[in-house]
Length: 104
Image 1 (cartoon, rainbow, N blue to C red):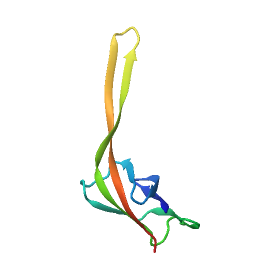
Image 2: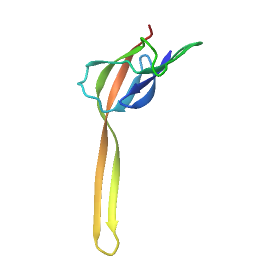
Image 3: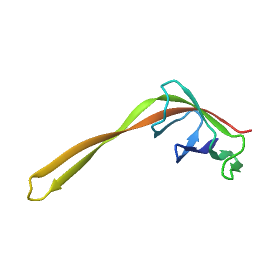
């Protein structure tokens, strides 16, 4: 069984007992969260597609914590002027443990 869920404006394919990394969400590690923007649920041959969401479908998850993405380097330079600037950035993400996909 898997579902397509909209979390923070982006769509993710999730399965039960899996971990998904999303954009940074408010909350602390160990906190339970629930998402009701379920766009599609597939259970074997049974497929439910929402218009735009599936009625009564929910996804229950637990926040595992905050993770950081790879380092991105931004380099700026102006030729013949001696201007050089190097800045690094690491994006913060939230890791979610998917506990249950509920369909009414």
